[in-house]
Structure formats: structure tokens, C-alpha cells
Length: 252
Image (cartoon, rainbow, N blue to C red; front, top):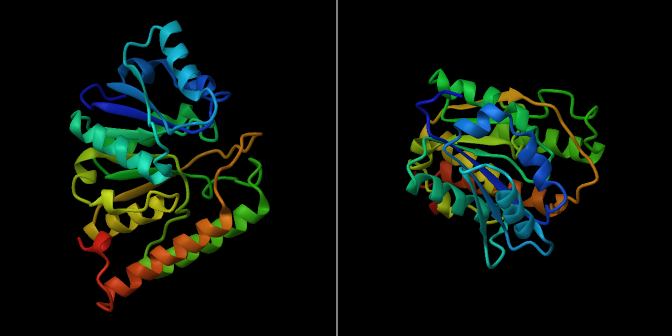
């Protein structure tokens, strides 16, 4: 990892007691040591996620590891709002979002940081769809839904991304300062809305293929409501872009 970049690794965690230690263990040693901070944000889990995080912190020599807990569940998007605000306030250059459920490979962090090191991107995400998602166990209904929603988003936004729905993301904090991400949804479609904001602001989005892994972890996403919310967000953008309705979160 480039030494002069202050990189923070944000691990959102919800009911991730079983997988959280695995995720931290799998972060490459050089990344662990050079990261300015690794911070876990437990989103009011109903299991022992927070205690597992505190226990890991106590038993492992990681001085840059911090563990936070939301007293009330903020939602997937709300948790990101907290984390990105924290990253900006603490002067980090880059913030990596690495899920605590072990669906994304921590070993790929340096790979996703490369476009930032070369000054080529303001946001990078790992694309499962650019790899072999079905071989990695992605359920066929999620594969089809992902393809459909991504195609609609590319059509509406005039983009050519292979995926809009990966949660493995890296942001420049300077770029985050330029968009009103606090106005995005607290729900899972936050990820789509912030891409729309980056598109409106003319920020550079890059994607890199990553492996797909689906294990026994519980998915907290209702795929039907998620899909409808994504389509609603795209519809709001379309109305806003045509001047038919002012949408505050897209008023950039």
C-alpha cells in the first residue's frame, strides 16, 4: 500500500459474530500494518458481533483497530453515512468498505487501491459480474436481478458499468466531500444513489473484477424491495435530469 495515502478500512457488521474474525484475519499483513485505521461499526447487531470485535481487539496486536457500536440500527446506508463522515472528519484520504460477512475477499484490498495510487479514480468497486459470479455460488435469481437492474441503470445514466450492486467499494474522501451522500437512503439502495451522485458530479468511477463467494451467511437484503427501491431511485434521477421534479439528493 502506498505509504503517503492515509487509508482507512471500514468494516460494517450486522449479526456477523461468526465471520468477523475471519474477515480481519484475512486482511493481508502489509495492509493491516500500513492502514491508518481499521474500524468496525457494529450496527446494533442482535448477536455478539460487538463483543467479538472487542475481544479480537484485546487479543491481537493491532493498535490501529477500533470497534464502534451503533446503539440503534442505522441501516446499511445509514451505517455508511456514519463511517464516511468519520473518515472525512479524521483526515483519511481513502476509505475502503469491506463487509463483515466474508462475502468479499480482503486479499483484494491492495488490488482495488491501485487506481487511486495511479490517480485514475475517485471511486473503485470490485465487480463480481466482471468475473464468474455463478461459479462463486451467486444464486441464479440474484444473478438475473443484478443483470437486469444494472442494464436499466446503464441505460438511464448512460454508463457502461458491469455491476451497480457490489458492496466492495473504495472511496476517495475528497470525492465524498463533493457529494451530499448524507441525503441518500439509509437502506441498501444507498449504493445506487451514491453512484448517481458521483455520475452527476462528474467523478471517476472504476471497477475491477473480483471473485464471488456465497457461503452460509444470512443475507439481510429483501431482493424484491431492494429492486423496487433501485428502480425508484433511477426514476427519481430521470425526473430530476429532465427538470420534471427537483430531487434534493440529486441537486448537485
